[in-house]
Image 1 (cartoon, protein in one colour):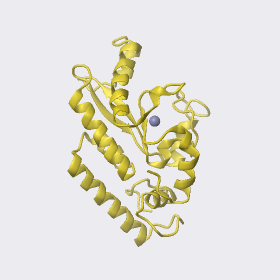
Image 2 (image 1 turned 45 degrees about the vertical axis):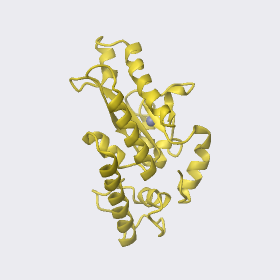
Image 3 (image 1 turned 120 degrees about the vertical axis):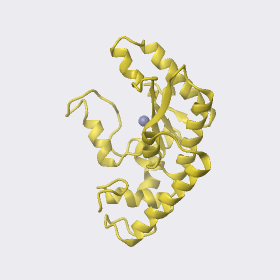
Length: 215
Ligand SMILES: [Zn+2]
């Protein structure tokens, strides 16, 4: 698999993703041949068209939106437009800082704070997160100097309450668009948005693995 392709080096994941998006009808065998490449090219052309219709955002957001299924891309662009228009506190901007993660990538971040250094960032193993199915993203909020506001708490420049308040504004925009927001969970995940409710996770996973359309 060429290393510049989406989700490289996980060719099986790429094929599953394209299959559940309705782009790929071949075998999920990890062998990226002409069928897979044609499916990817069509998916990326459709993605470019959606960006053209709805408008595009900063490079980081664009890189992550490109990893979402097409309907989710549309929702993510509506969401970003709503935040851009309605605004956060003065000088603050939101970016999409995470999109789809392959199963291997999910296991890597699950290891963080457990078997690997760092602090725990997820409770989900591979296949347990909506990030693994192309229908979820995380947002980050940055100040006018481009600093991630979550980091300003440690530096004493913002209170955790003030940071949470910004994420709650974004949460309200997302919910207004019909998205499911991690801030509503028992263990809140303020940056997180997804297309479907958590109680559908097993169904979504089964559809993804068998290549059926999810949303
Ligand atoms: Zn998330």
